Structures are given as C-alpha cells and as structure tokens.
Image (cartoon, rainbow, N blue to C red; front, top):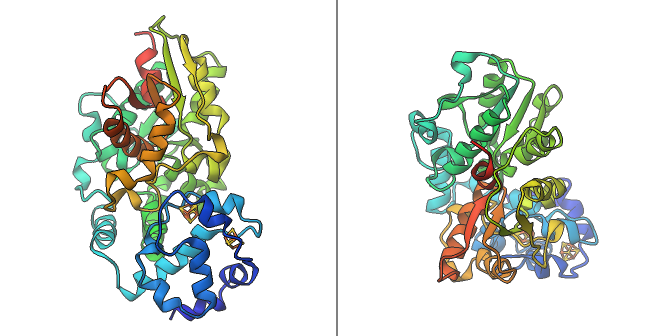
Length: 377
Ligand code: SF4
Ligand code: SF4
C-alpha cells in the first residue's frame, strides 16, 4: 500500500530530490529513533513497511522548521502526514490517536468533551452568539482548546474582553462551532478533515459577517490555507493581526501599571508557517512599562514548543519535551512573563515553566491575557 508514495506527487519528487544532507534531522525539535533524513533513506531503500510500523512518524510536530531549511525545498511534515494517512487508512493506529479522531468525529473537538459544554468558558460574560444575532462585523472563531481547556479558556475570555473594550461588533458560533480540522489533517485523517470543513463551511454560510479572527494559529492556518471556498470571500486573521490594527487606530487605553520584562515565544504556526512575527511584538511593545526581551532563537528561527501535529495529546516524559529546552531559553532572558500567542504553546510552556521555575516567579501568558490585564476599566 505504501508503494503509492513512489507515484504520487509531490512525494515521489521529494524522494527523488533529497540529497540526504541531514539538515532536517539537525533542525528537528523532537527526538526520533528514525530521524526525518533516515525516514527518506528507508523509503528509498524500499523499507517503507518498517517506516509505517515505526513510532517515529508520530513524533513530528508539523513545525515546518525543516521545510524552511531544506536546500531541496522538501516539506517533510507533508511527507510524514502522507505516511500517517496510510497507517490511518489501514486502521493500525495507536490508542490515543484513535481516541482523538473518534472524539473529533463524535463531538467535533479533540478534547473528548460534549458540544453542549463548548461555551463553558464564558458562563458569566455576555458574548453575542450567531444563532441569536445572525450577523456581526466579526466572527470570532474560538477554537477547541480555548473552549474546553481550563488554562486556555483565559484566551477566549481575554479576547472577548478586549474586543468589547474596542467596541467591535463581534459574535461567536457558540455550541455550533466545530473543530477547524487541524488535528484530523495533521494526524492523516483527510476524510474526517473534509467532513469537519464541510460542517464549518455550511455553518459560516448561515450567518453574515465580514471577517473571521481566530485564537489559534492552527485554526488560522487551516482556515487560510485549506478552506479556499471561504477565503475567496472572507478575510481571516489571527487575533494578533487584528489587535495590531486596533493599536494603530488607538482603540485602547492602558493602565499605568507595574514594570515587567516579557519574552515572546513565536508559535511555529504563526512564524514558520505564516511569517507573522511583527504583529505580536508590536502589541507587546505598545503596552506601557513592558519591556520586550528577546530569546536567542526568534521569529522563523524560533524553537518549537512540541505541541503541534497532534503531539499535545501524546504521552512524552516531561523532561524530554521540546518545551523544556524552550522553557530554559525563555528563563535565560530573566523574564517576569513568557508570552505566547497560541493555546498549544500556552499549555506546553506553562507545564515546562512550572517544572523549571521552582521559585514560581515567572508566568506564561497568552498576549491576549497580558493586554486584557493592562486595559483601563
Ligand atoms: S534537509 Fe532536505 S535534502 Fe536534506 S536530508 Fe532532509 S529532506 Fe533531504
Ligand atoms: S516539521 Fe518540525 S517536527 Fe516535523 S520533521 Fe520537520 S523539524 Fe521535525
């Protein structure tokens, strides 16, 4: 079955073009028994069945570091997705991957949570919902992790608070919202991805709005790159892009608050997948008395938190996670806050910093949470 890789483009071309330089393996944030370079070597040696049965193909976080650095422009994470898709189609998937996919199919989210709890993050807040409002200028696509994860719910609460402060006419999809399909796509379940996309597109068609903003760089990437029927008509932005515009329009007034040192971790799905690196910095630097202190590896050279590609749900000893390396880099800047702009980065780095920062004087916050805490009442 795996032999189709030798005929199908662009994978056959990738195999032909690879010069086995190993830059991909050297760039990779995760530790694999069979490195990306080795995987190509094994496939070219017709040992594809060994590759498909090896857990290494589930280690990729889809960070795209190797894709940016490969001298032959090979997109390794796409190649690995293709291999994952073969295993998924054969039904030979491990427990947790199966659970995520079943949860996506059954509940429309990867967190094994029922749809009716999707708005639990805003029990007390007064957020407009499209099923009642029918139209709004902006559709805020909350995403599964800020809807259900206790730590990441702060992102949804902060973004809605900020939008209200800026007097933006926005609404959310509430319990009708479904996963954008990122986990299904990254885990090789293309059929399930198409199913979720179809459901979301028909939901979007029910309501009137001019723009979508997302909490997550993963939803942003999927909506902008894999929902062409949507982006032909509607602009989609990550919330940091939208807030950077609001800052240009002087929509916010900040409290004269305490001085803080903030270091910013670029999420791969903003920086490496979309070259969005300036807007988050612009937001941080616009907040009075906040000093942005940079880590050694920034922007497209940032080091992955390890949470993409479905890895956030997979077991990995804490000490071996990429987020521990990144957490050490962040702490070396002596920050008060490690800022992120992604719910997966928030969870991964929060765990890492809690583990590393014994004095508990450093916190991990999403940029939305930092802004929300500094706006005047
Ligand atoms: S960096 Fe590109 S050319 Fe080099 S081994 Fe990896 S895939 Fe092959
Ligand atoms: S996309 Fe990232 S995690 Fe995946 S092989 Fe490339 S460098 Fe490694």
